[in-house]
Length: 582
Image (cartoon, rainbow, N blue to C red):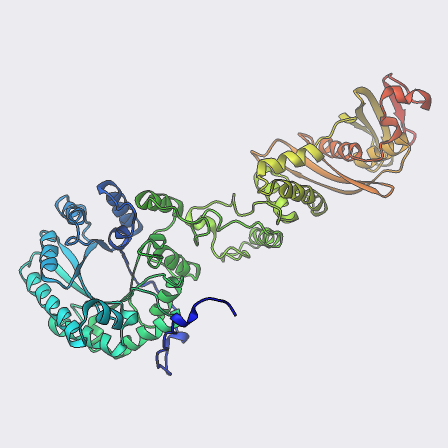
């Protein structure tokens, strides 16, 4: 048992809806979207937007394809009033876009709202008053009838003022604010009282907006509330049923999705969820959730980074790095098992050539929203072989064999643990090349020649040992086999090449070929990597790199002063014969 004061709170009562239908429904088309960034989002900012930031947000919303945009609360502040006038007087509203303005159900505020709309082609006037049991008791001190009277008087004035503006098509919207804290029968009663004043028809619908002004229960309860209203409201065919979820419990997106399944036609929200307290429902997440299910979201979100930059500039608030679809880290895997699955998923996509996106841990293709694959896999102490291998292949053109990736990843992990941070792609490359690639001391390959065919094939490998040139002549099935045989005999220890792989490096990653070998000597096994314009020279350099990494140094690669008593050619350039080839 905790010491939390749970006695101060009571659970929200479930809705009696035994035949609820929404759980079996699937969203197969996008709802109507209404952005409230310029009103609800703006009023929640520490530093409300000025004219420049408002216009930038307005243009971004238009570019994305929003057709309904709540642009302000013109009766509440002069800057909001001025912005509405600016949009109208400067002709900044496209013909297919409808602006929306909010007003309380108070006469002086309604009149000021209509003043702001003079000259508009089309506008939504959004009327509201609070209806919850708590606000009726604590804020207004009114019973149900008193709250209905406020709504009806406001609706009557809105209707009268709209009639005096025939040049403007006024669309009517009503919200019983704090709907989630209102008894459903009363919410129905007050909405229908407003409808009795406005007289909607199927050809001239009104918007009834049912906001989760405060998110008070789980999303399924909100869905039940919406379905109950959807099924019980009179003249449903004359209503656009709208929702406006807030995020107090952190489930606004789920609440909105379930509300659409329950019968809602329209969703009001903001980009990335800005708004009062914990914010509004995030329209970007909602839209891309639909997109991830193969449903056209009806919005252009092909460059989510640009949208993020605009919103951060206008709101002067950062978007969290874990924010769905847009955060800096949302397409990034640090976990080794996740990295392995993602790498294999990309490989399957390349090889399968299918149209469907199917990559583990990535619900959508980052490129579809303007993100790259660069940050899909990043490496820290939690990462494994696949992360290291993926970074080397993606960024530097090295398709590292699995066993080598495992060995390298252990060194990378030690470095990540030492620094307690991420090991970047440049650091991984530096560790890899320093330890494995073209290791040339003391043994370095400088040239290669071949003569004869078949059983008579002969190879000459030009090397330097501690800077002194030698030519190794050998017979073998190929240059690697011949080189390994020559080295084994001259070193006086058994050396065998157990693994060999090679590939061309892609353009931009470096010229020519890269080869990987594993060399075994007794119980020791080492890897080496070689790069060169010639595929053969790359393979020979890889063998030399592996030999140079042996902890048990071959006798003949000791410094010249240590070779004097071993019968080696000392400091002179020599020619060694192996397998009958001189």
